[in-house]
Amino acid sequence: MKKTTGRRDMRRHVRQRADLAVIVRAADSKIERGLRLDTADLSEGGAFLRGEFLFEIGAALELEISLPAGTVVKTPGRVVRVARSPEPGATVGMGIEFTGLSLPDRRAIASTLTNLGPANPTTPSPP
Image: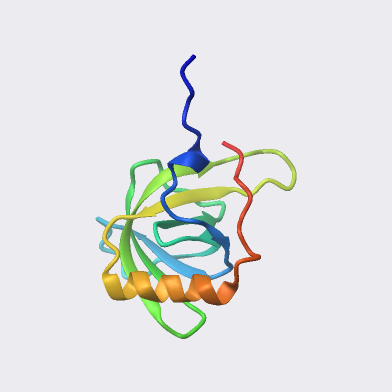
């Protein structure tokens, strides 16, 4: 019997709940202003962004994440999951994989996650 790998098993980084402001732009957009969304969770590898406006899976994005210490992390990302659940209480949004996070920005995110504390991990989101 072949065991399938679940989304949670595929993650390389632990996610933690985090409510941070993020400015999102399509990577090929010439528009200066971006769309403001909020994170539901964050890891060194990506984030889940809450919002009604969703990009399609595979879309390349430019992200600006405002960390609590005042640092703004700027990184490219890619949409890897879209959640459009009509169920009451379900989180609507999109999973983003960071595709070009610099080492200093990775360290800033790691420091933020450490400061959030270990008692703050997320539960797996439904597919």
